[in-house]
Image 1: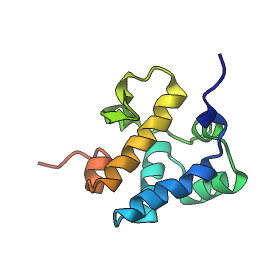
Image 2 (image 1 turned 30 degrees about the vertical axis):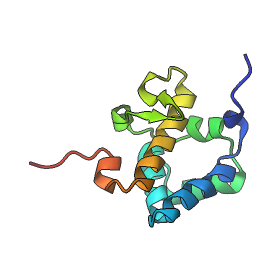
Image 3 (image 1 turned 135 degrees about the horizontal axis):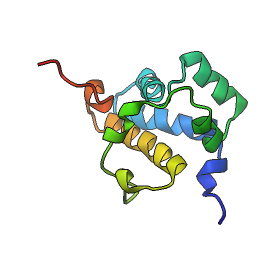
Image 4 (image 1 turned 120 degrees about the vertical axis):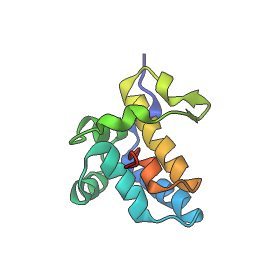
Length: 120
């Protein structure tokens, strides 16, 4: 079975689309970066290095310093598929990121996007 095309695409080629999607909805590039840091554990320097190296999606997620343990709380539909039902791990990670960027563009608060529990 061949790999999905997204696996071999450079993360840097899609990143500007994430930023543009957010900015069209009056959100900031820094918020996109914060989501990526939260999900993958990349520092800002690490993210910039991956962008500069034109790392493909598969490698980007494989080399992620620390995938967030709360990412399994990300639920919902992206591209017509429920993210929590995606079995292939790399595709699930990619769709988690897509879903978080969608939530940002839809105006959700960062605390909700980053699955932070409220302190009651």
